[in-house]
Image 1 (cartoon, one colour):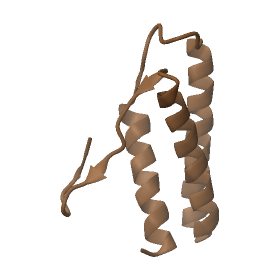
Image 2 (image 1 turned 180 degrees about the vertical axis):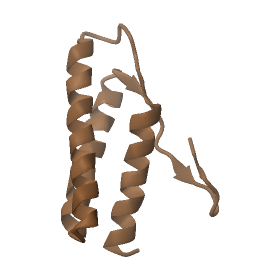
Image 3 (image 1 turned 30 degrees about the vertical axis):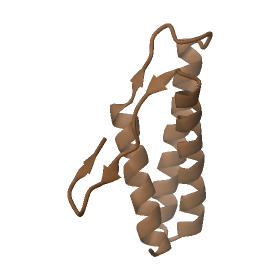
Length: 96
């Protein structure tokens, strides 16, 4: 898969998660404001990834979206949010 297609695939996945994730109330000792701050950072990295993809700097775009995914996965591992990464089923639309 080309760098261009790969970065677009990861951007689509991160977009999906950011739109569908749920913040879990009362999860551990993490303040809601801290969760939102980390989500803002993830959104900024995703915005950067789109910018670099559009500028045809695909490697930088991949690095940016990887940071975004890492932040989202961290929130999930800490029990602060709930989501599933989308998967593509035999050419169909993305699902949970």
